[in-house]
Length: 51
Image (cartoon, rainbow, N blue to C red; front, side, top):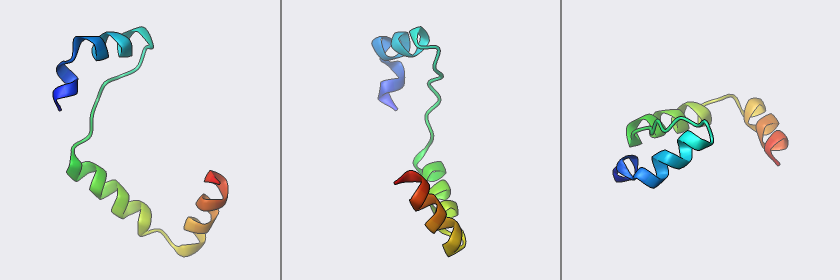
């Protein structure tokens, strides 16, 4: 998470009123697993919505 100490990045997020709150690899993996464990009809609907 070296980027989180980059003053230019932090300044840019502040200017754009964004939050710099990174997720860990474990958190991203858990979210991906949860997303992919949805019923097939939900996944198909999301594919249509996201293009």
